[in-house]
Amino acid sequence: MNNKGQAALVDSIMFLTIVSIICTMLFYFAINYGVNVESQISSFYSKDFAQDILKVITYINVSRSGDPILFETLEEERFEPDYLLALIKEDYADTFGDSPSLKDSTKRAIATTVTSVVAPFEHAIDYAFYMINESSTERGHLFLFLATRECVDDEVPCPEVERNYYYCIPYNSNILEDEVFPNLNKVDSSTGKVVLFSEEGRGSSPTSLHFLIGFSGWISEDVPVLYRDNVLGEGSAFNCREFDDDFYLIEE
Amino acid sequence: MIFLKRFGSFFEKGFIGPIGDDLPSLIPIIVALVLFFTIFSITINSYNSKNESINRNISMMNVSRILKEDSMILGAEQFLDRCDRLVIDAPRNNIMVAIYSVEKMFNDSDLDSLGFDIIEEFKEIERLEDLSYSNVLSEDTDSGEKFFFCNYRRLGGRNLTNMRSNYYMRFYPVAVQRELVFEDISYLVTVPSIMVMVIWE
Image (tube, rainbow over all chains, first blue to last red; front, side, top):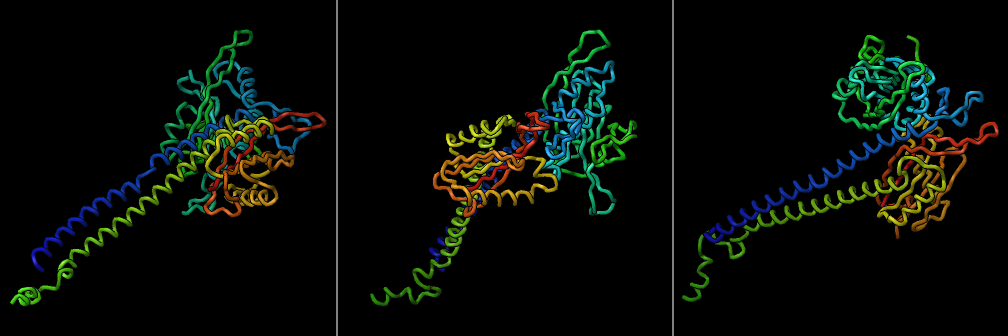
């Protein structure tokens, strides 16, 4: 090959090198284009979903007995529709002192309301629904309703998973952020503010207290801190009682 | 002599010819061109498909915002009004939306298997009803299974039955106010429901 041929070969190799660099840049652009926008849209959809769930929980009616309003199975003597927040506000106003509590029928109403709203997505997500007294620094939870999944066996892979529902009054206001959320990949939360009234004693003026009402949902994962043995009982940080299949609290 | 001089190069060692000498340099050039156009077409296709996906997601977000607003639907009339607004917004995709009762539809099924049933039901509606451009058919059923239905077709849009691309489905929780007659007394109760949206090109 003469000198001109060698020069042409070197030129063509340089051309190939430059085109390879350009192609690498194009490929990098093709991989990364739109990734941020798509993840933001996906994040928006899941945040929107949590907000919708919280709104629907507060909008829908529930029977004052705690039974869900099912059109086919209404019981004649117990049908009195109301709103969940109305039941909670009434119970809160009726209790005095430092340990407000809700009636068992209201606790059942919380469980039936939340599970009926989340029912279409029940097979995919675990969730928490709660109310926290904003002005209380320690034991601020009015209640925490938890829906979790747990493997019934120690085998790997898990042969069967059971669904558990708990009514909890944790000792720590930030127990979800401290104990549960760090173990999860992604949590979608939505919160709102509610005012409840309470009296120090009979005949005294009512005090208004600001509560945070919230819903947090996540794709079902194995979270040991939420196993039944770790959440049940007053000795655990969660201080939970379990619901049975009809959403009545199981006696301790 | 001139003849010999002119064609003297033919007698030089290693000489193939004017084009033959350049052949080795042509190979990297051809490889470079093939590589460039392949990567370029991959990039263009990826860019177009991602743009389509983003536009579709934005379209679904906008439509869901119009139809569910604050996740509360007070009745058929309100849903009809919201459905009519889709014509003004003119989304780029074809859309079908139905609202189902949670109680009736989700007692034993999960969303995956129910999704197929919903698609079949929408195709059946297409078969039975005359759905055309910007037809916002709405119906209120008392069966408890499906409350309201809204359809939007863009100009020249294909039916779900003979669409060319994939369809996409999303579920949104909503609260719907319904009339319940119990012991001859009429109650307005708000029940949890699910809004199903199907969108396609």
